[in-house]
Length: 265
Image (cartoon, rainbow, N blue to C red; front, top):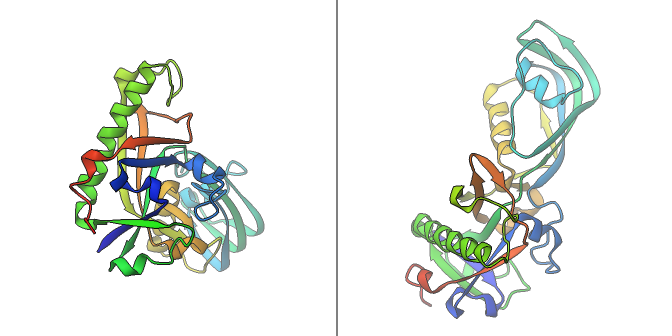
């Protein structure tokens, strides 16, 4: 498999520059090809059809702070989470399980801001044609080299942030202790999720799959973006286990050290 990057020719990695955006950048960009006003955000309806028994922790999660059962707690997601039941019938069966009948819950998730680099996962170079029609250029990376590629970008970004902060051109908030800042890199295929989810079973596998998708909104998008076949790299700044959100929308890195990894066409 290949990872393809559609781009404007001036931002082609072969021309010496790699553009790295943030989640906020994708929400506000003027480029309609990549604009997603809810990048890293998702609001959807969870429809419980018929009678479904769920454990108390699941119930507490999708009820938000409106009503909690027992001392089961709720799933803790990074970022911002809002949830509430808006219709249906709820019956407490015991301190471990809850019977839901024809319920609808609204869930809203938002990821903390981080740097992102997006590509498309394709089998052949020609498969990338037409994914982003507004771009005039494209380059490719073997998927087998994604780990090496992501690591090198992380090194470049770390050095860039340090030098810019030292020069007073802040990428992270002024006053950030740069000696404690580390970049946490993740990379994988983006998963797509419907805005209207119907569930008629209490099967833990079904619920666990939903919970996993909600945990990291940086890799979850609405299913109307599925044609992008996205493979994403994210870089989150951490200081003493706390996320430090960037205050810029994008950075430009020198791509010279990356050219030996990409496919030369």
